[in-house]
Image (cartoon, rainbow, N blue to C red):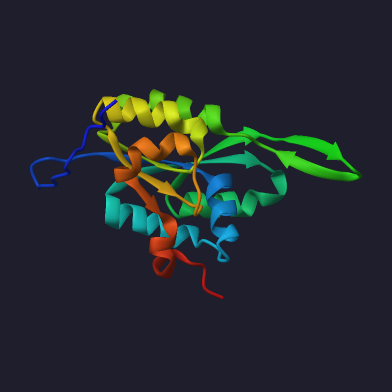
Length: 175
């Protein structure tokens, strides 16, 4: 299958709307695996300035003790979409599981008519169907991958893939 390549022209007359859909778990763990932490406020500014993202949906498993973090994310300009989490008990420890993949794809389709281009922030192959659909319909803008390695299902869209490490200087949390 041949991928469509789109150019993006911005003018005062044409107001394009770009929405970002962010897998927060994949983003957070991805940058941590590269040895740094993300400043979510600066990342939101980068999305707005570099990619003209008017709405950024951040998908997260809801943990009540993180309410202050969620409030800050909303203050930074994210629309936070919560998923209930499961507590899985293994070897005398509790593992929190809050898989947001279905919610992200569902919201991308619910909002589909409201945006001209979509950006996904994840390297997870579970989003292949969304990326493929956006590409087929001329809406795929970028795939921002937070890991050095990402799913091979996304390789056909390599011309859209940008590693977040390229923006590290701009979006790394400062001490």
